[in-house]
Length: 227
Image (tube, rainbow, N blue to C red; front, side, top):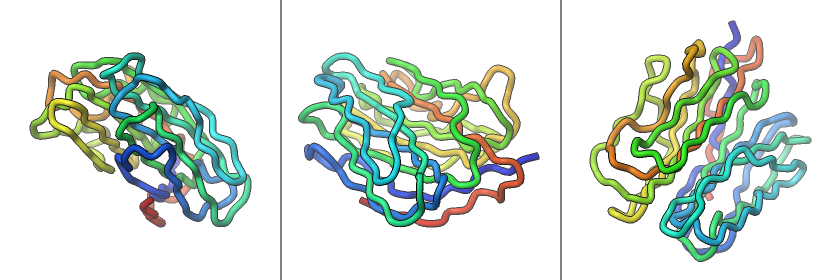
């Protein structure tokens, strides 16, 4: 049975302010899979500009949010065409809003599997169908109710995952990203990832599956580059 893909944290940050772009720098190997999620506090005036990265092209996985006073969350992926130092420029998902981004690099992978989205959910999670065993899983959320309270992460393959980051303005917005390094065997009905509490959210949630390559080593944090 294949092991989960290696993961390195290429960058992880949230809510860089009102600037139009943010730049992420790091080192990749040829064939690395780069995934970026961008989260904004308001969905009005969407920018819809994919990130730009040296030596690769980003493909959109998800873009959620429709009106003012909603949160917007976007996700993209790219494969590195060559190894070495690279920079990625991420544009804010909406005009004139507080926003931020998460980015990850995966090695020993077999590309993107399933993607799941949920719009205006009252629970801060989404059910992600699965394509393969031992996949790595990523979940991101923008809650425009800004519900406070203790956050409880959902369990997948006996793990509650790792919260990569969280920010909140109470009663206005919340945003987070959660990763699960090994999703185990796919459940026939899919696996729900993200937070089970607090409730009464209005969350736009994205889940992404990163497929495992046969014979790959287990997950390993190789590097971390904050913006």
